[in-house]
Length: 287
Image (tube, rainbow, N blue to C red; front, side):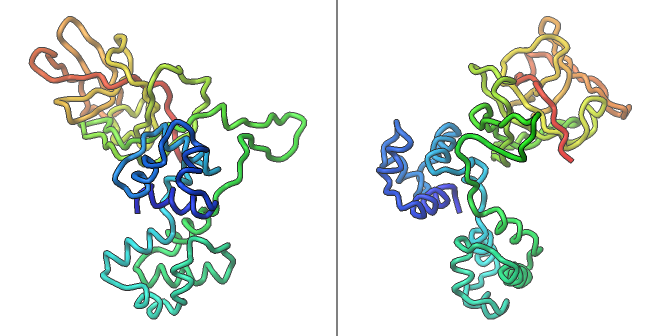
């Protein structure tokens, strides 16, 4: 299931035509939305934000894989029909077909567990998807427990930055182009004329600065000052994060590790294809 399926489902739930959704978004033709829903056109990141706002959901919810999509993917993998799943799990076919529109209760979670087991999945995989499938209600401001010291958070003060994959803090590896998810960042921490994305650290060659699993906020830049920790593309394919020192045509990538196996590497920019992708602006440790 692609993002177009989610958009179409949410649009139909809100009883909107393609033109009505296009009018809500503005600056987009309904034919473009039709192609996005069909999967023949991929929306840009900015367009996904506009569509999510127009549908009244978060970007994370818009891009999340639904419970039914997970089930359908597994059915295809196992060459199993919905009817066969119904018999094996002892769950009504109607429940399986309408699983994305139910308001789950304790009995429903029992059904979900049976479905998961019948598909060879961990029950929590489907339970988590089911628990989160009801779109959050937000009206551009988030309120919480009242407090004299509490200041409401305005969602417009934040921006969703895509998490593009992993970068190895050790031997270079390809940084994936697929979006794993998004992370909210205060707009005040970003420059409005710059592009940003997240990468996740793998390896231990920078463990004096970042532990494995750390999310690095990267500001795209073709050049960085000496001593900057940056993401560097080697040979056009492999990305690594290191402290960068450049003298004339020589670039040195310096690890910052407690592991003595990691040593600096020097590259001749005339002979080697070395590209600065961007500089590390923030590091977020995820527990």
